[in-house]
Length: 244
Image 1 (cartoon, helix red, strand yellow):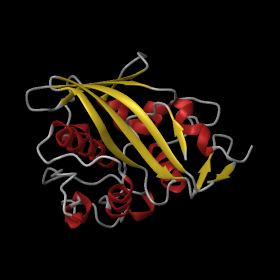
Image 2 (tube, rainbow, N blue to C red; image 1 turned 30 degrees about the vertical axis):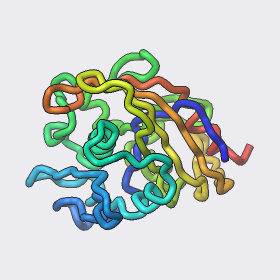
Image 3 (tube, one colour; image 1 turned 60 degrees about the vertical axis):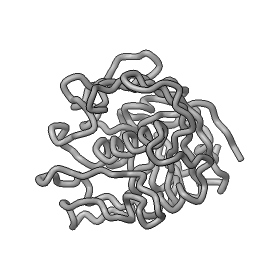
């Protein structure tokens, strides 16, 4: 197995692009997407009645299966870790799958900002426009956030991890209002990654484990006001570049 240091918090276990149904643009998440078919509620997001899904209603069935089979931590219901798990997974639903920030419920969009390695923060509208991947990875030797659209970046990483790129909380160090936590991203590199030059890289089948840290400031309603993420973007991309 290949273990890498810190990775982008924003590339949470998104619904796989190849499992989105563009013909279904409204409606609540299924029980399977919420995790209930596996006996555990890990994502309890309820969209506003007038929400239209950006790429079609997300389907988390496959990535949930991978999550439950390969996670290393199972936190008791009601624990701080389980609360943070739901907050982040719900945040992912909005940031990837709802285009209008005014329909977001997990963030206070009047205050929200996300910064990487102490850099210039991005607000809610910018994240909605370019997408979490492009915002948090940016420019590296083998990935260009400026050169990829929101949809292209989602498709690229869905292609890289066909079984899903799952996310879990490992440990929470401090509770609200400043929530500091350690997390893990994990996925098998069984698909194909396309670098910024257009070259395709076939995955080697290994499990990619990414361990990271995030500081999230939340209000009394547990809405996210800011995210501070510290990591090396190359830690996310280099393991995917196998054809050099």
